[in-house]
Image (cartoon, rainbow, N blue to C red; front, side, top):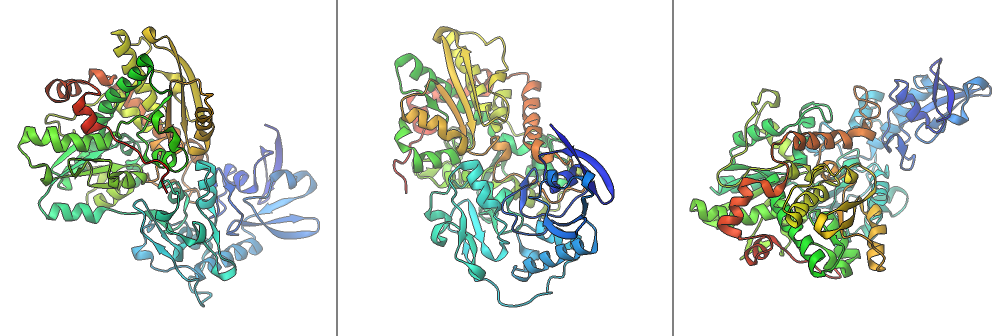
Length: 594
């Protein structure tokens, strides 16, 4: 990369030519406050004006937004210089924040972003006064009708980050600026509810919102009520949760595998049983791998597309429901676990299924919609009764006064169900479902294990990955992995046009997979003083590495070798894709959903 010299606060630094002043400053050890930038310092609209700096030339100094100003345009050799702490710059940034605060809700104590609010942080850094400017506030819209996302425009600062994130990640642009002037708000078209537009409920917009304008629809009260009512409240936790939950308690991204302490905290919160969704990830692989084999060997519809991402299912039903025959009918792992808990587990323990209340801890806000789907119920009982995000679980732990760093490492409960393999752990990262399925499909087809158990061709955080895998008896099979609907669209269009050459495609809604789900801990782009400047580029990989390490360290790494899974099929289900499995573990989809 070509380098240029930039002069910041009297010192000359050599930086990449294609950086903005904001990016360059962070790499040189300066943290310029910012609210509208998110991804590696790239700005959405340069609208917040919090990152103003003074750029001086021979003709004097002027203010510029550092998030969009290129370093190539301020060569130090020509006497150009950037000032972050000059009176002109500091006064301007303070005024920008004060203007934002003047039209902002002040209920910080009850705000869902309390402790993570970037607006409050930049107000403290700039010394902004909350009531410097007072007057009429923009009328508020409060939308809590959708199962996954809540929108409160009284806390919106019109930075546009959510708008750009929806376009970039999912390619659909659900959000935009509505109305004009002082009445401007960010909303779906015509200020409709998220429940009335083709929103995927993925929560990527929540992840980038600097304030509490967007948040998950919390279900902690439902869990509290079930415990108070005396229900047998059983909790299960998704693989990606353990890769990130320690971040809520001060750990750096990827620093700690939080499994043992998370289990200890859940026991102390009073759950009847604490189980691992990794077990049912193995169960999902057994069903999905057999379904794939049936399609390959019996002339079924190909490519088969995995179905464990509810955001992807929402996208498919809204925009590609003609591809329903391609989509695996397998329920996602936590829904499968709920069905098993209310049938097999209940029968073995003499419990009334109606008394069992299943809570799923998920990295995903779209799981809240999935929980309520009528197709995810058996004999009139929902598979899962409540979904809480990683952030919600952290809140429950803090609310109970449990000290994370003082917790011991504890094991999941394992009465009849619970053992999991390395294959189940990697479900949380893009490519993990594909890799786990290939391990088991190869064994089923050939009666032996694949020698190179790590299918590294499908690993990595690229938008689309493809590979050709030798499946022995089935010959060479082409597969593809993608995450983010903007990336998936090309593959889906190829299927629609009859041009797809793949047998199996894994699609995850959130870029990077569940490790980057809409319910995961916030990665704070403006609170960077004590963080790695490149954390926004590496946080997904750091979380993924936690899961791959779990896989590598497991003695059993293939779903079909899970002893508890073997017992489940021997004693109850019979075989994968049996009549009972179809009844409990498979689902259906909605065509032309509105």
